[in-house]
Length: 347
Ligand SMILES: *[C@@H]1O[C@H](CO)[C@@H](O)[C@H](O)[C@H]1NC(C)=O
Ligand SMILES: [Ca+2]
Image (cartoon, rainbow, N blue to C red; front, top):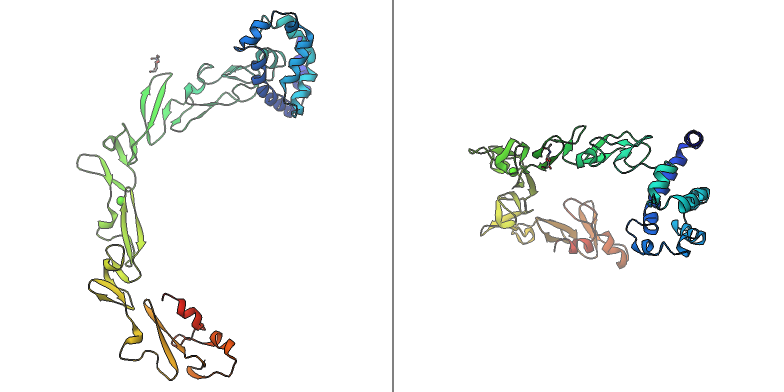
């Protein structure tokens, strides 16, 4: 009869339902422990009184087993009310752990910790320390899964006793393994320091003592950055930073670290400074009614107030004053830029 119930249960209820029950049961474990022992001494002390062993008390407790919002949990408790009654009046002294009695042994939706599958077999590595303490057992505590291990970071192998590349074995026997990360400079290693590297990672090389040290890419024969960039060496790598815009080549940050000045700048006491083209003896904005504005690294030409550009010539404006500002043009590159914008640019 019991066997019949077992098969009925497993073959006539959908698998989804089983997963749902498992979830409910796992949540149920906490409340069951809280209400029925697992160190609940208050209950232990009071359980001999008439009230504490009464059906009224059972009903009260069943009402607190589920969150009122959990439809699935309440449905399951209702569905198995008889089981709870049986346990309450017959088994709770012998099997005080309701979760174990109900979820694992009676309705069989869970397995004890460290076991998995329909028959609650021990996980790989044993039920005491599944995966030798270095991984997760597939299906642990459920009636499903394969019992195989997904190893924690740093560990590998069916038994999670081997170290992955970049980790070394600190301790190892048939049942215990501790894998520790190598020094950041090592690709593979036998110990924790950079002197314990077997191979260096890219960006590191062995020194005369055999320890992995940073490669200074910036001092190489042909440095890796562009001509107008500053090369910055870092541990295991390097970076390229744009030089100050006053420099065309540089040895550091700032306009005083230029090796050569950029166009529109000139050396003044060791610093590359902007050239004020507008104050050069030679006029850079030729033509009548044309004015010059100096900007950093360059300059702009535009027609004077009340004039506008017509094919490179500044002619008296025919439009109202309000429009004039918008209509003013720059000279040399003849980009339509208003005076307003020019005045704010880098000045
Ligand atoms: C393996 O190592 C662990 C931890 O060092 C130790 O507790 C255990 O007894 C060892 N087992 C064997 C078989 O040597
Ligand atoms: Ca480097």
